[in-house]
Image 1 (cartoon, rainbow, N blue to C red):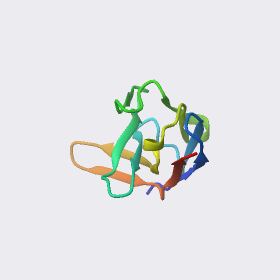
Image 2: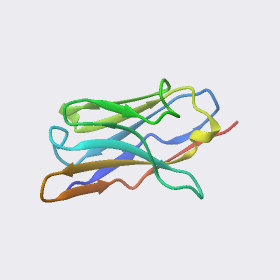
Image 3: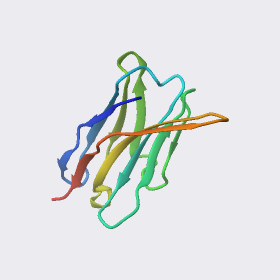
Length: 119
């Protein structure tokens, strides 16, 4: 079992920045793919960015060049640095950890943190 706890959300003006954190209850970054997802009201949850166990990253087109995903293995913490925020970035942001093997998939979610971009 893995517990994920997000923090760092809040209200920010357009053009501003926020940094989200996700702390895992144990060391999993060497085996799990970690990701940030978001869900806006009335919309489906979507992938924002992810980072694989070997450190490869991927981003949604809508956030490329503005958001950066990273992790600190010593702190079991993943981050999402969000710059140049837009009103359309408003959503609940969720931390995700997934491990896929040939015989099972383990998938864990955090409780989410609200990000609101508004003037």
